[in-house]
Image: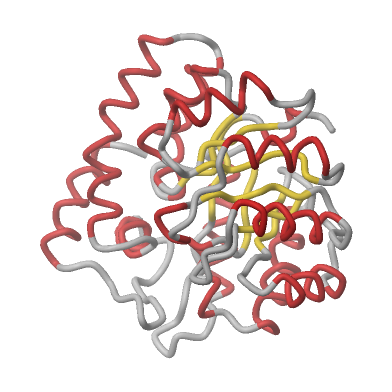
Length: 294
């Protein structure tokens, strides 16, 4: 597997809605165009930032096809397919049309909090069912369980279709352990914007980012600097990004991103319950950064 395919800045894309909360495909098309023309290296459809828990199976199928149609092969595409019922995910993987996509991102099981052995067996089962290369997604803040470096490396060695991990633990030591001991061609992507640039400076290939979904040129500049070992520039962007990241997550993701994108005129500021739009104070505070950074 060519590591460069997922090198750099990827974006977990939000799902725009009309006021009646149906999917706004016109705005989604504009958003995809905005991200690609801003230099984003690859896109993730139906990740958590895309409000995937509130999107029906038929809507997801339509959204996947729409991404392929609008992308026209310009950047690699990753589809999000995950959950906490292994058998149901296997069935979804066997049913999905993978045409036009390059990999599948699958979140570690949440809520039922499996052991490390359970997590290993979960991905071992998915490895046999996936029609595309599979990327693990470790996000302890949402799942209440961490995929340890040891378990990640065990999966990497034993599951030939698993090509990498998106690690959103924010634990640089864990990332360094994976980098030091990973097999050849196993990629490490940050899933935590706060520590993304430091992790790339340690050797990670890139990031699947939230902030780059609404400040793409700004954050990509820091990621590219880190990949080029321009540490002064990378550190500068990382420092400038911290207060923006804090605001984007202050009242939940993707509420912050949708606030910014609505201010840019790309989407309408609607979310499906139980998520709601950010408060007026956060919306106003974000507007100061919208004027500063692209």
